[in-house]
Length: 64
Image (cartoon, rainbow, N blue to C red; front, side):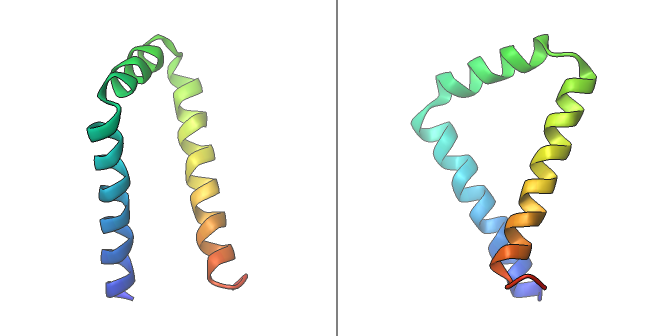
């Protein structure tokens, strides 16, 4: 279980790092756009991202 958590964090860091390395201007643009969004909209986007992440993990594990 611990190995899987470490693997998951490692994959997140790889993906995040690729975004910053390959398209830093896109990150800046996204942050500017998000700054203009209402707090509640950003919260909903975060909750949808969490739900999608949980669903992906659940599906990858064979539906429980």
